[in-house]
Length: 319
Image (cartoon, rainbow, N blue to C red):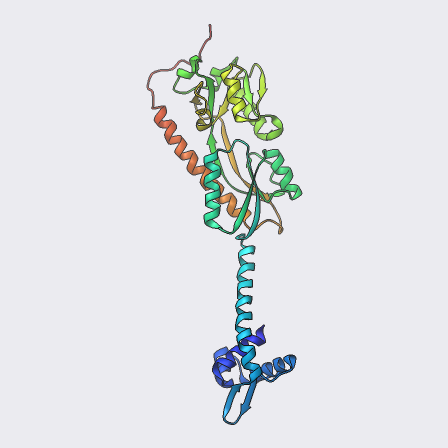
């Protein structure tokens, strides 16, 4: 390919000295390179005489093909660079099952805008399963609930998501501007199964106990809709973000006093040289989308729950 580029330059100039000057090299090596190319092709590409240099019939025939070949080479290099930068191919990405449709839509739009020719294969997978797939090569990147063991992972920026409490709308607690974890004493708790995100599951229960809430009974719900149904039926309270709870009119969502439960979610991908080149950028885009949607949800929740200066009781006693 290098010899062909030299040939094109000489063909453009039809003068070895000017071609060498244009190429930033001495004339003898240029002449030798053209001679070597001619020997490899088995044909003289230039007619050389005292009157000057002109293309031979073979050279004229080769020139058009060479232009096309060099253009293909440039396209090939561009293609390789884009693939190496993560702009082509397929990215297998895991997202938590409770990810909202709005977040998924915004994330896919951001990926399409950043890398239009990259196909993002989104899979709904729990944190524990994502970690297993990332280790086995079944996923390229995932959005996981922290904390996680990052020994074999690279972690992107994480986004803090404050959780509130989901209550039956008929509960006296639903009338309070905010609820403390201690207020929930005696209630059952509906929580995701520990196998989904063991570290986060344990942290939730540790914080509850430290704040004076030891659930009477622990119930598990993998599906957000099932979680809301259990709360509606009076089988316990749950922790969630506001937008998820508003799907069900028979429940109420209230912020937790002091914001003791903050879910952190962020991108994770395998460490090492075999990592997908688009994994880091996907994690960054996901963090931007999550932060933007959480900020918008917080503004809506603030409007729905304006500050209340009325003194609130330290606890609520049920009769």
